[in-house]
Image (cartoon, rainbow, N blue to C red; front, side, top):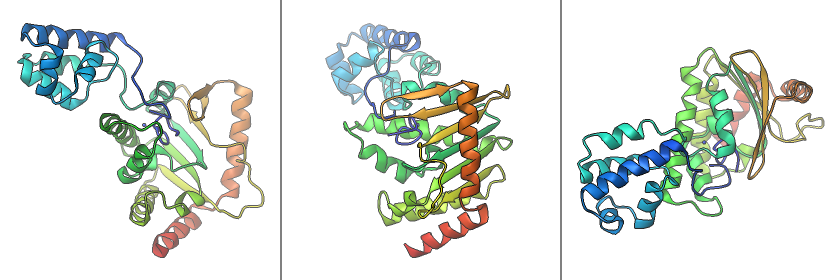
Length: 285
């Protein structure tokens, strides 16, 4: 799973689980607890009223679990909290649905001048459709709960706005042809995915190139890579494994990754050839 939500997480990565405790989460939990006690409700009495389990309520009050929007709204109504819970929820600092190791990259990504992505494992999170993303989430191991899946999709959908809301940021994607041939989620999901990628490729700030299955020389055999030019014009890189991610600042390493990415751009199909191939693949489904 990649992307911290980048890929399968991409948006949590491979880990699901509870977030690390942050001050804002602990504060929100204390506010919920105070209003619950004011209403003279135990956690066991309060839980069914907001349609969550008592252990989930306990995790939220302890600051170990990020509250969903549904929990906030239901708790606000049940506890008659004068808008305090809604207000506190707006200031929560942890991004639900993003793996802890991916959050720093996600913050840099949101301000990037340029973003280059090569992927050979799955369609990058910024290009995924909801159906494709949910297929990845549902197949994740260990299994995710419904709340976790919703949080991951919400985080991914929020990140995807960058493509349209930052028209001055240059986005480049090099995708392996086999990612579409795999038909993750089935024919209908793949057809909609190709349509979506073709639509995004029409944006002036988005370039999509396909690396053909048959390619005798390939500079990307070391694996996926992301390169980013920050607003300070500093270049950074990010590589992600199944349960971890690495932010790279070393100039020598970044220079090597830039060299490989530049070579892959010449080895992949051109923008026009890539569009033509995707259209033919879509027609063959």
